[in-house]
Amino acid sequence: MAYREKDTEKMFYSIGEVAEMFHVNTSLLRFWEKEFSSILDLSKDSKGNRQYTAQDISKIRVLHNLIKEQGYTHEGAKKYLKENKKEAFERDAIYTSLLKIKEQVLALKKMQEEV
Image (cartoon, rainbow, N blue to C red; front, side, top):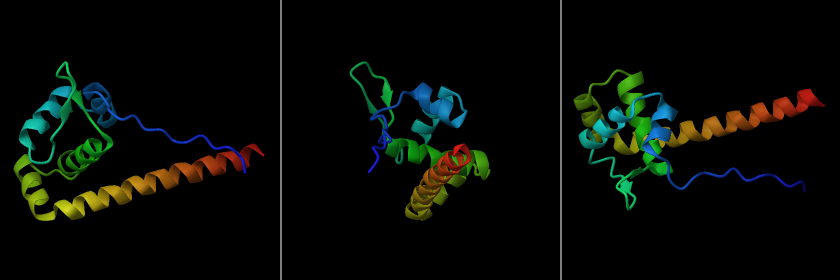
C-alpha cells in the first residue's frame, strides 16, 4: 500500500488566519465574539491572543453563513441558533465533509489526467 501524507490541521489558528479564511476583518470576529458569547467561547494564550480551534472555526462558519450569506440580522441569527443550534452545526459538519470529498475527487481526477 502506498504511503499517503496525512492531512494535518493546526491545533490553534490566530484571529488573522481566521479572518483571512472568511474574508472578513478581525474587528468583525471580535464583535461576533462579544455578540455571540454564548456560542463563541475562545481560549487565549498567555499573551492574551485569541486561539481559534477547528470547532471554533466551525462556529464562525455557521455564523458567517447565517449573517453574511443568508442575510440574518445579529438578533435573527441569535434567535435561529437558540431554536436550531443542533441542526445548524450538523449541517456545517455535512458541508465540511462534502468539501473534503470534493477535494479528494478533484485530486483523483487530476491524477487520472496526468496518466
